[in-house]
Length: 601
Image 1: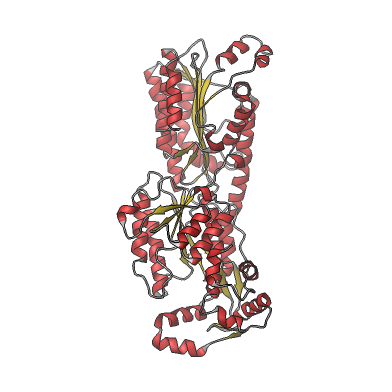
Image 2: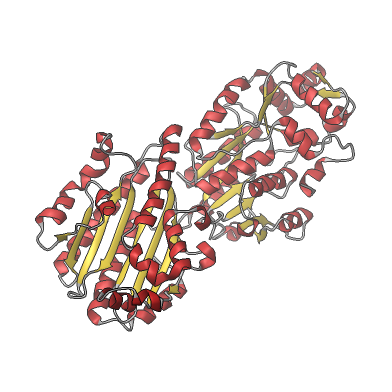
């Protein structure tokens, strides 16, 4: 059901009791079609929290006396009758939706009503907007229903015939039947030039008799048919390129704003709703920034040093800590207290305990998975099985959250156990949550250079790394992983391919120079052949990793990273340079340690 919440349900039940039977039946008929079509389109989540829930269920204040006095009859009588109206407005959220709204109204006693929804796909695809709207007809015929059923194009169809054929031809026969052939349906021609100009190809705007059961079923079938066609298009549409994404996003914002400002219904709403509610409803319909709420994010595996850094990046990327939770086995541990001090809410769960994962993603828009194992020297072979268990638990939700997984940048056939496990976890998420997974692949974490096996020798002037001094390496700030995750969460972006998060590209020689600048003393790079040869015999996994860094052409990753990010995200996150990272983390302060990165900003 298209439910706005308990308060709205109670409010509409109160008003329905006052409405004449014919109007009540007409309103119930219209709303039943809206609910069925909404379910066929995807049954997206309904979120009535915009403006702190001010639009979730409200009664109109009614027109002021001076406004009524300025109106001629019968307009004044109509406005007075509409003065006491129950209303509910909400945002709709779900996979591949850029914006969506649902709304419903019902006037006490008079029984006038309207209701429906508008679903705007994200700019990742060019599928049209789907709109269904019902309204009560004239006072002379209380059983009259007005229906608007159409998919609003997101391109200029006068210059894109292929778009028109692809999205509108399949509904042409039904459109012609309702608009021109079936005498039970009376085409509506608006007096508004703007409204007439916005009629979509294969768009339907008609009146019909809600008391005519056969006409009702014809209207219902048409609404379900178009909802199904739209849902299929949304599910199968290929992603568009970066330039098209940018154009669609800009056009969508303008069209929604103009539609909200120029709607013929505004004449009545402005008087009946009052200035505050009128503006809020328009802003919600337009998808204005003040109507958008921070995504609700669950953080997994974020209690370590790098995990807390990632959370800081998530919050700096705009995610509200008040809408963010984190999984912990023990809220009393220092790391859990650090996250709680940032404003996050702890959720007690254990990835090794399936029972604790039931409904773990309830109420979440996105789940950021920093890891499913600790940062340990010994390989934890449960990493991929834990990811699979978490993915399967999240997949049981009616609207599964977007999963954003922190993985590692490498080919799929390195043979390095730690990398293979990360990629197996990727596969587990993608398998259980198709179309709801964003894979972020990190390169060499800048934060690793703070650890005890690296920082002390650098402070003394030597940066040892068994890689040629002039070989370019891709570096990733963990904070940037959080920042990119924030953009994915805000945009509900699930790119088909993994996103490489490349914060900077430097050779060991350039990194040594940056260390020297940050700490005020010379640092030289030393290529440790002894470690390379020693590890080959006694530390085979370390040797594999060193060999990976020596042999991999990182310039190919660097060249592809930024264009891929621009294609996947409407607003790619700004990334941190290595010099900026050293300054932000206080590298020059010899008293600071790796542990300080998590404890402090």
